Length: 132
Image (cartoon, rainbow, N blue to C red; front, top):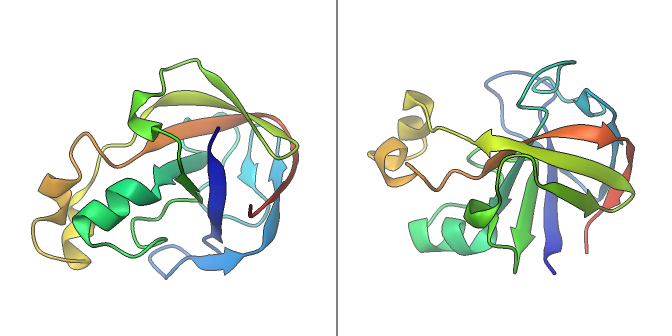
């Protein structure tokens, strides 16, 4: 069983994510107030594990993930798999493909993240998610 270490919300595109202690996940939208979540979108919530971030020397929240986990092998999740995170139910829609913007964090990060940038999810059932 994994642990939620960090929760992040993007209130404005291309700005740093803001860490929150708890957040409301909204069914078929994403995190309340987050610009990345949209109805019908495959990228309503992005999961990323701390183990991968530490291996790459990247601080949590920098790759625009909404949830940073510990002890959950995020890259081993499969499309269609469902996860109960707090009171919310998420469904994995597939891997997140890194884009060129990752290179603004550090050179070659886009390449280093290939196959390791986490999993995209949609919110099936809304509910409160808290760290820990």
